Length: 604
Image (tube, rainbow, N blue to C red; front, side, top):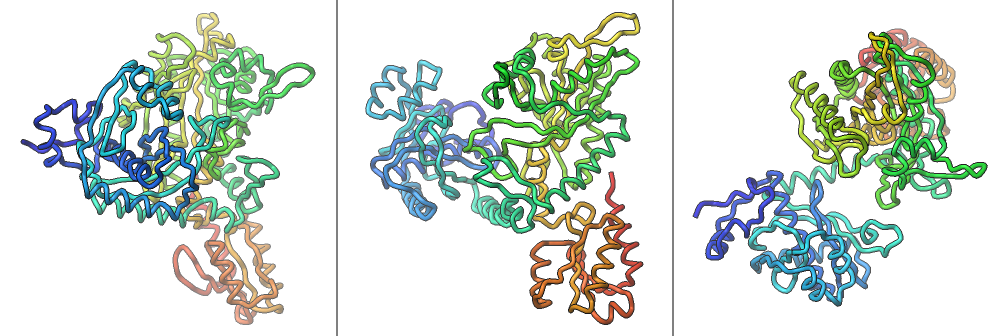
């Protein structure tokens, strides 16, 4: 029998593809690789192996769901005992024992009534059954463990060899904050030892780059329980970093004909109902009542920009009309998904809305893609693109969705851009291009987006006067490049490991006078640097020179300047260049010219 390449199996079940007599042979000859499809099946099977190990170690465990995720899998379950990170090695050991012992993974099917009866003593499993739409349910078993599961799975547990449990946390049953808290264990699995080793090395590197840790170390941002979860507080260094990037992005938009606007932070709920946000996005909108009228705090900026467009009569000669805003928005994210700057409840978007004619859609998208390439390229990011199509909940006609989706795809094809398709991943009002950047650790992050919207202009009766002097409805293009500033800052911190290029570093240099007589010269240098917008600080604390140098190095500033008798007398500076990993002495004026050139080398 030929080897069975799991990498080529996408939607089928391995058992469904084999006759009964060939299953044992398949278990011996099966070939795993690290393709996406192969890892999906391997990780799904590893999740069940973990659940089997947990059921043998904790006899009272009851299991909810155990899906695969982007880099691995997890399982949610109830157990009377508290499971900590220290217990993961014990569970891993049991998993290895079970894998080495090896049993076949078997599939059976049953009716909803049969499944309900079979798990009549398991309230958590009853919740799973409620969420399965089909009347015929499948169950997978291995040894003394069984669970309801769609599959597919490997034929045998002995193929599960290279895995690691990575984290234990809590998770609400079904993601509902009003439900009980279950235990969740995360893990990953690979087809080869080398792939697992590479991934674990990446995780260790990611820990060093964790933006939450670096945010504290570099004094960029903080959070306060008293203020509220998911509400970042920007410290001076973080505010400088943001302002530098905001200024650069603002400037390039003005140069390209975008008009700055600003909408209100809070709007009557009636306008959110008219737009469809209230019905389709209402659970994420914070609401309040003023003078017996309900208001919604904006989760996005588009309605404010619609009102700007409405403020005067528009002609076809005006199109495309481009509005730009750093808009602060609020979204009611569940507490369980909040994660540093990467998932917050208040954030700022570099939000643009372009109103154009239908014939201008492709050119506007192409222009937006040029800007995406320029800005992401400035930060050194490569990226991939994905077209997200009509979701289950949507507004507007199918014909309009077809035109909008086709326009996006054709614009990408005409530019020769390869893209994937995320079926059903669009916004409720229109399809979109999602742009995922790749960081220094090869992780992908969703930031930029370009969305085509025929629906909101129709709902708000937007119009422009055509060349035939008739009213026409414009198309609205929603576009953000950084997306959420907070999320982008988190990604940027981890991408550079806190060692920002000099052009965007919040503190360009730390100036360290050796002793008190050198402090006046240090402050003079600091003033000269401030004049060229190179923010610097003088470290003149009553501490040893070596300690002040160590503190400056920990802050990851691009340059440390040491000044003593020689430097004061000769009007020079002694430089420790962190990024270039070199030390040198240079005339002060030459240094100021050099740092100006270096800052200007990275421009948009």
